[in-house]
Image (cartoon, rainbow, N blue to C red; front, top):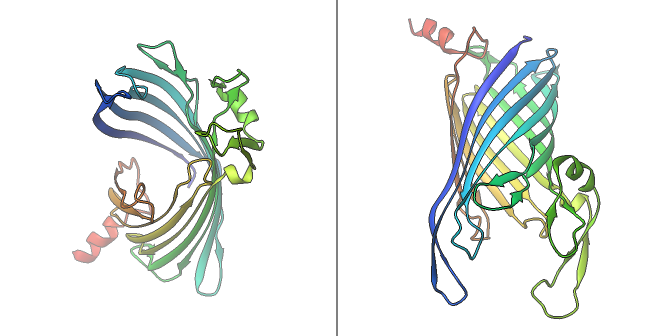
Length: 295
């Protein structure tokens, strides 16, 4: 089916109020740290296999530089673009559905502060992914009885700096898109008073690697496992995830939690509630068929 779709998302991360102290352990007051964003997105099916999408984000955050009592509010906006291409092939007892996708998120001007003469770059992210889903041909309520999905992806943070001596001067979004595709040198002894030691991080090592496995029963009940890997010089986050989901078409609930030896990233839980408001009939809606059976 070829057509349009639209969505709205509100996202909020809050750390509450945090007390800030100086080097002598004197209190400098408290700062409120939060980040929220409103997203409006649209997608269009160019063909039955190709979908393109775009979104706009309105961003607000409040934080203060470490070691100060400044509690500055940052505001800005950004754009998202993406494309997905998928196909379907029948084999003996299953249907194979490979797909490939690409996206660029948070492309836009720097965030401005309401109380400081300072601008911060947005953390643009470029993503690419491949997936292969297999579903059995047997179905009930127009849904396959079981599916298995294998997914893999690469992500890259698109943030660059201008040449400015010893000071960090963030580059604009267009220049960052060009200047980040090169190897970089990082100092491996930043706190040492000795001569600097450096290591080269290749473009490949700057990529964040994702992989996951998803099992579903009738595309209603889901079990999921995943793995997230970052190089030690771009975040050094290494953790696995496990989770589940229930999709009742009009409402969907997803949950996941991290598992790792690193206590910093261990047992971080994630909940997501999705509400759908369909404007026309959809083959994904199993409720009419289910109500017929109940009657």
